[in-house]
Image (tube, rainbow, N blue to C red; front, side, top):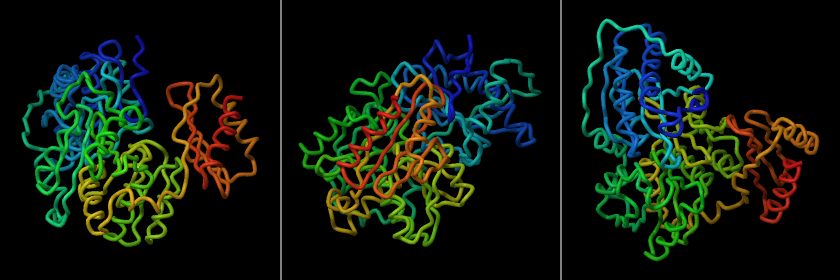
Length: 454
């Protein structure tokens, strides 16, 4: 059986146990140890291991620990954690890297392994993933002189909450009523812990019980159907805002007091403004998909915009290269540069947003209204026979545009702009289009879709 399809651009992911099982997880862990020993030129390695609440995660977690210790690495086991807490642990505990068993927002039959180097430095396609894949496929590992040992580290979440609350006066945050829906997934863990430190905030919980069968809905807030109940509950409770997180808790979305989704591009712009107050003239990263309000707000607040390719590992890599203090992806990932590494920080985003609304003395809908200057198609996927032929048709049709080739093709005109990317793993083309008016957005989305379909 070929295992190539489980090695993705940013992590390992597949259906359990047909595509990803304990035997493979153990080999992947062994391969990681070999890779890191070679990279660091040292024999003694310490690796952080964590897992999410999926039904297959405990067994895969044990297999990963077996592989790491079997190849001679010492393990710090942080247990059941969200992805942001996992990244924090790798950085805070000074480990040489980490492996987390999780399939993020994928349906319940999936599982996966997130892989990171020291200081949460990303490992992905073109950056170590191919080597891990080759070693896993070969399955031949030399036995080390000593086996690794396992240390359990309890309470890492509490340490993370304290760390991210530093420098924020929690008492300044006004009274809020917040509805949160983590979809029975890992966001429940840090949301509960964070809001316990904010007694002035009334937290209305939806689907907080950790359950890898996802009884309420899939843990993917990017899909409208998965946040429909949260929107209704915000209105029914007359809440100030709603919060939704994904399966491993590294993506976060906000619903305003009128039941509308705060577009990630707008939230990213708000965060850029806040971070630029703290770090004047700093660089802010954001991905190439349309979301022009972000660039507007970075420039308006004296910052330096830095456009990246799509993908959390690619944004983190660029943030490190350009020294960005903050970065955001259109899919709800928001990254912060901490002294010890760059990784997603949804708790810090929550605290900064609540403080901003407190100081502005406005509700979220009113605060965001002036920022809704552009109209977005959302991401539209097309199944196509020939992906490259699609790009050629678009080049021909829109040859008079300003064309950028950073990630797929981005075509820019004065009144509308769009990005078309090819899926790495499927015969899919992804379209994101934005315009200065709703009518133009709808007209151009239909037009570009026609060219893609051919």
